[in-house]
Image (cartoon, rainbow, N blue to C red; front, top):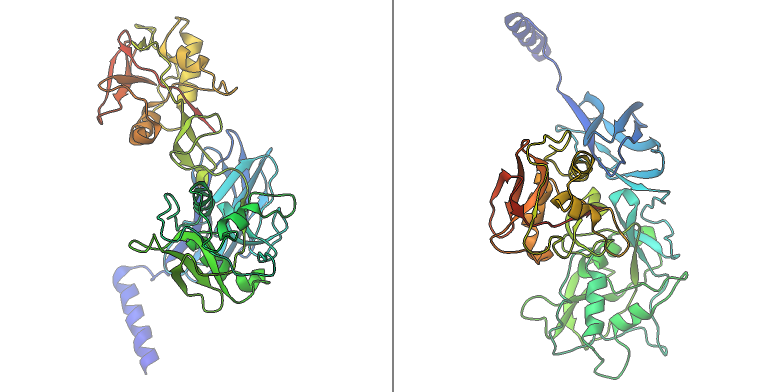
Amino acid sequence: MKKLLAVTAVSSLVALTGCPIEDPIYSAGGNVSGLNPGGQVELTDVINGTTEIVTAEQTSYTITTELTGFDYDVQVLTQPDGQTCAVENSTGTVSTINVTDINVYCVDGEATIYAVGDTGPAGGKVFYTFNGGLNGLEVASENIVVDGFDYHEWGCFGTDVPGADGTAIGTGADNTANILAAGCSSEYGRPIAAELADDYEQGGYNDWFLASKDELNALYDAKDVVGGIPDAVYYSSSQGPYGWEWWDAWNQDMVTGIQGHSFKEDGARVRPVRAFGPPVYAIGDTGPAGGIVFYVSNGGLNGLEAAPEDQDDGTGAEWGCWGTDIPGADGFLIGTGKQNTEDILAACSEAGTAAALADSYTLNGFDDWFLPSNYESGALYYAKDVVGGFADNRSYWCSTEQSAYAAHGGYMNVPIAEYSSKQGKQKVRAVRAF
């Protein structure tokens, strides 16, 4: 009887609306970054049998569209020429919302893609990956034992070590370096945890460090897959929380998974870790050419760095070619500054222009600098404090042309962007992409 009533109700609704009720449709996809201009990568969902070719002009894609409740497994079917792409968050189930975080990261050349449990480049076990497995962390094959002792002090008991308070994944190496730079020592004249991790070598690699609090927790989460992690309490490179930083350091119990903090003079096990994969940059880092990174994309694999100094003579430079409309030099977005600069130089032969000064700049052998576009200059403004060296109350040229007589520029000490006569003098700061 209940089934009959339900069918009758649905039939009545169809009759009233004139169309049948349709189940909702959901999709699976994500973002793509790092593809070279003109490049493309072919993806496949091996469970649902769908494929999708994604080009460099796209920033996102959808590979599967089905009724709710479907599983997916997205993989690279065909790699782009001269590049390697990897898929992050490649497997899962679509329930009642579109999945948009199956992200694809691409780097130049051939690269190995790792999974948790694999053997890493140095022979340790991979326990954490990101950027689709292009980058990650591996753990040493053994605990550190010195003169029969497998418990070691953190060191610097009673001292707040500057820069050793990072807890996030990616901070362990800096923590370790800062502990060593502070000259930390043992209360009992023995090697300390950070020193032992830094001195460790395996597989020809000597860039090991003491894991941060979160890196150590990632090791605990993967310990059953990694294997060979003795049950004990292990030191991280992270000092204790506020109020305890002078006396304590964070540790991890590999039996219970509980993280706590104990006196730096107490003993705990030490297991070095190391990072691998293509260089990953953050805003404020020193870039590949020696500039300051002010914008990152593709999980930190790509970005923009700014020259550490201005390129004009101190008085500024003209944008140039007043009265001439430069074909193609109207790009606003991030990624268009280099083409703008090339278009300006191709159509404007005047010497000493802002674009010419940026283009002729060389730093540490890198000569591929350019005048930033409007949006690239905006990104530079928001990172101005870490880049540094900007003139107060002076506008900096962009490569984005407004008209035959005007071009865009902006101040670095106040959030003001404007366009003005190409004949005016403004400051010049070159940038480059990596």
